[in-house]
Amino acid sequence: MDQRRVLIVDDDRQVRELLRDTFLAEGYQCQVAKNGAEALDLFRASRPALTISDVKMPVMDGIEFLKAARADDPSAAVIMLTAMGDVHTGVECMREGAFDFLLKPVEIGHLLATAEKALEQRALLLFDRQQQEELERRAAEVARDLSYASQYDALTGLANRALFRDRLSRAQLRAARSAQRLGLMLLDVDRFKGINETLGHDAGDFLLTQVAERLRECAREVDSIARLGGDEFAIILEGLTRGEAAAIVAERILASVARPFKVAGREVFVTTSVGIAIYPDDGEDANALVKNADAALYGAKGEGRNTYRF
Image (cartoon, rainbow, N blue to C red; front, top):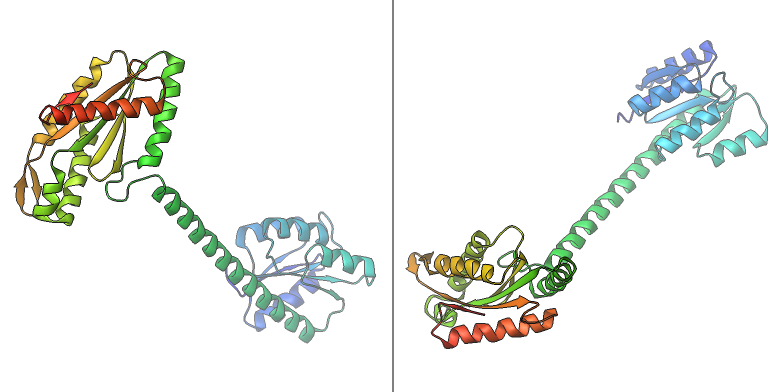
């Protein structure tokens, strides 16, 4: 929007031309219209910085134009002119958002001074609105960041423990409604503590991101993966027709994690242990499933690691 563009609206051609020539001489860009309807089209197309409008006009009068313009742009700067000196008209104009209400014949110097004041106020309003929009944008970004941080693991981008529990409860309800089985897998990286002690925590964190990526590759699109903390992960397997289908996913995971990782410039070999619980066979609610999957995980570790157990 050009801050020096003025729209002049009057059904009297001589008044239009006088005002146009006056504002042109002061360095403004000018558009003219002979009634409110024509002015409204120009206003919507070019968004003038200032509009100077007569009140009484055919087709659409100045007050109707003012209402429509302010509805489109609440910061619109409009100065109303009229030969009718009644107080009611002036009050109505100001109530509808006019910057000022001047009587014809208007003194040109006063009109120009009023125009400058109107433009200054509009500039302040626009600045305030931009500042408010920027604050709202930043607040929305912070809210999104906080929402993300409260649900996702910062290191791997997987769902965190809180989101995992919510997803597990919802998945259990869906399985109950559809009379299908649901699989829960708990797994961790075997002897991960030794990786941290040997290569350092940064290398350990990098290894966890790589493990997370391989879990994504092994899981189906409908499955939900979470990092519960440390080297502990969980996978929710939905839509199972039989419990043995979870074993297929577990075998893929064991084979994938067993492949060498490139960490800190060297090849690192690790394995994982997996515990599996099936709804409703191993528990009819989320807490029971977690408890039994955890017991199965410890069973896998007790049998030498690098394996899975139901």
